[in-house]
Length: 108
Image (cartoon, rainbow, N blue to C red; front, side, top):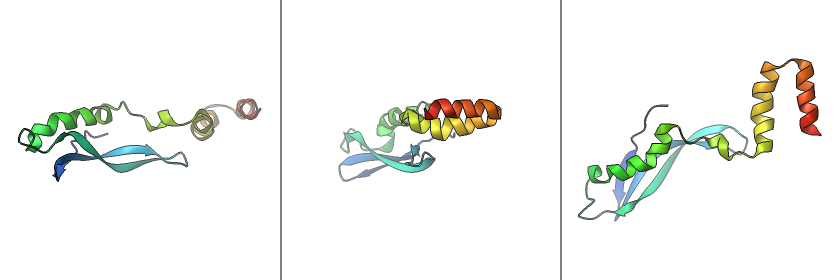
């Protein structure tokens, strides 16, 4: 994934950053969504420019840019097995007899 810088802007007396993040949908698919977060610093004399709040934005974007956030890590185990493990690994990698055994164990 490309490194994100985010779009930094202020509205009223608050600073915000807007960036894209991968979000797990209810059906198990991953979709890219636009996220807007309010920074913990007010728009005042000390933090009047985008450059002055850039360090706060870098802290927010560090997990996103570092690849540390995985949307599938919040998926329940039953959903993971049924939507990711069985179809993407077991069906593609194992023989039919093994697939049947895996499904029987999972269903019972």
